[in-house]
Length: 198
Ligand SMILES: Nc1ncnc2c1ncn2[C@@H]1O[C@H](COP(=O)(O)OP(=O)(O)OP(=O)(O)O)[C@@H](O)[C@H]1O
Ligand SMILES: Nc1nc2c(ncn2[C@@H]2O[C@H](COP(=O)(O)O)[C@@H](O)[C@H]2O)c(=O)[nH]1
Image (tube, rainbow, N blue to C red; front, side, top):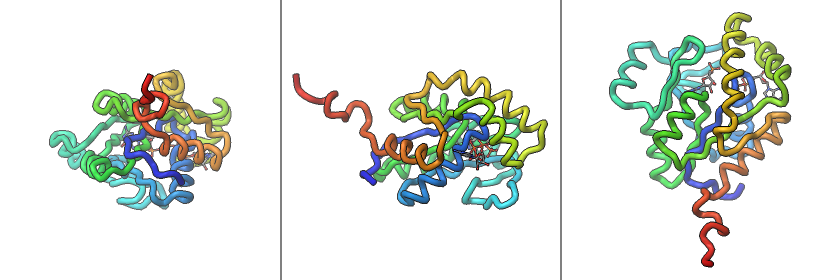
């Protein structure tokens, strides 16, 4: 892998599109890629490990983090709250290393506001039918929660144009490599054609 750029990259996209699957594939291929572990008030799914998939916390703890400015961004999504602890991201970037966040649209917009230099990547499904099928096939939520997530997904798909890049998750390995390409791309002001003298 080319040396990743020390830059903040956000991966967003509708629930069930495969963000977690693609990020896991990126890490399997490139263990050096650092991915933020979010806080959430959601209950763990079977197999999810505290501190690895999420920091699972009670509402009071989440409130405390918000009140103390401990989160880079946070949002309520389908009945639960999710947020990115700011300190590890700061440490990562201060050490000259890249940081990858896997978050939903409201959070991506907050990151855009706080860190305009961040790279925002949208993961899109090959089709609406495929998105519905993936969310149902995962089997982690009951049908009413799936429908709630799909209602949000419609608005998220409409916002794809706000992002710097769109990656279609038609194939996990291909999408993972495309994401790695974006993680290793120099930021716009460092691209040779932008900095070349007249
Ligand atoms: N390219 C793909 N082709 C077929 N199935 C896929 C693909 N990518 C992911 N999946 C499957 O789609 C389902 C949803 O994937 P995943 O949980 O990674 O989505 P997500 O975007 O992280 O969802 P959420 O935002 O709800 O956490 C999983 O069952 C996963 O195995
Ligand atoms: N704004 C944020 N969104 C986050 C964060 N961590 C995860 N997420 C997104 O929430 C939804 C639902 O996740 P699930 O694990 O319950 O399926 C999904 O879009 C995640 O990407 C975060 O720190 N901030």
